[in-house]
Image (cartoon, rainbow, N blue to C red):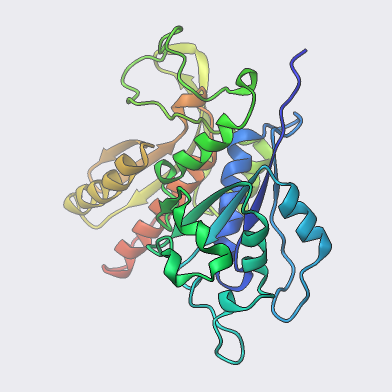
Length: 307
């Protein structure tokens, strides 16, 4: 019996500025490595306590010092965040974020810079955490394009014993998927969402979407599960412009929709081909991008109907 590996990850972030980014990072990592009804391969600690004016708890110190990997979430306001006296918080010895980075010096530390923030240079940081500038980090767009996070996911995967690596491409077996599914496949593959998680996502986030099951065209004995939404536009040219905009984003993300255009109607279907045509968090993120893009279209044109 293969022992399930477990890697512990500590997410450091400023709760008042970067909480949403930390939550999404947590969910993407969990959705990639932890499968339903199986022991977790990755355990993530993300403290949710109020931090201003509060002493750093021992529990947080213990979690940070024992983590295999520390991810430092750096948003646009991370470096310049100030206290009630307009003093830069990172310069204060009791700043929680600073203490977390100080404690993590001897661990694997990956800066994750969001929204164009960039990793601060050493001279902009207190000496005790200036080492952060020399650590290999990643820049992530706030739309959470999955390719941006692939280096982080790959680093996590490589921290697991080889017997537990399930995402890397196995050249020996070859790619048994049928065309027209694109190359390259994802290096680190996400885990499929459970039916319950899909139901919750539709109820709470994707109100205009539904989940549909249909036969796989190239193998009718197999089924595919997809998120589906129908978009209505003012004209055929508007549909084409929308598809081009979404297409650029999808191509950058290496995650593509299945869609059908009939005159002023666009039917979109989202599934993750790399995991057997099941719904993953990648489909949730792309669906949210489609919703935002369609809202921009509606805001710039007469009222449209959609379902």
